[in-house]
Length: 355
Image 1: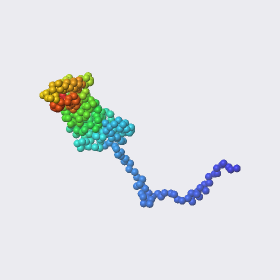
Image 2: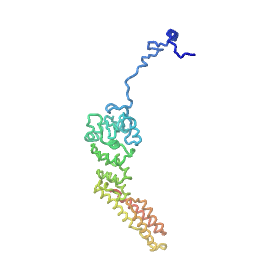
Image 3: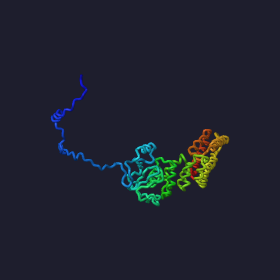
Image 4: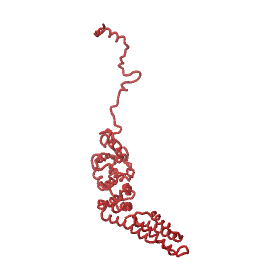
């Protein structure tokens, strides 16, 4: 029977095995086959973060370059990068000069946590009172009580950069226009010119929200913009003006808007009231035929006036009036009709379309 008891440790046997084994001892010299191990095993302990924020812009282990008006999916992705990450505007980043070639040296932090790197001296040159006192800070950063979308619009307006690619909402555009004077910026210089970034962006919103755009321009005293946006209101009934819009635009601009709409309808009726001139009786067309032409004209005019709106186009008028010719057979009558339609379309094209 095999014993389950372990044999005692044989010290002499172990010593002989070790003595006969190859020598695995590593030499104490640090140079082996020409390689300096001491040099190879020396590490640089001065680690640097390749994406760290430059001096003067605060601290952080990393940053996420993010435009404040990027889609919400990108916003959410940035927020998930960890507590040490910061969100930075792609248009006004730490490592990029501004549109005038100035190196950023001041960090503006919006209410929703997006960083905008700007040049303080350049910003002072465009504003009064140190950009609302923010640039008077002794630090190289300051909080701005504006959303990233609004501050982005302000900075683009200052540097005359287009904002159309961001498709800003009318609410953000209104907030940026209202904030101009608060930060020492001129509405006359930054919004009044028709080709200014904010003016162009507001006009892009006018087709879908005409009364709101007109109200904004009227309330802020932007006459050029109010005139430009007023033409977009012609396609909407005055009955759709809300009490809030009417109050916001003020009584003067509300009256001007009514005069524009009602004045164009009156002008249309006046132009349409003149029918084609009758021609002399001929063998093929006597007075009865002329009367038929008159009745056909009156019928079509009645239909146009019944559902007329102030934005009816000259082309639409021409097409509808040409229907009168379908009821005529006399060449003289058709000639007089064409002459009258051409004059009518020209007259309607000259009627004012803005306040």
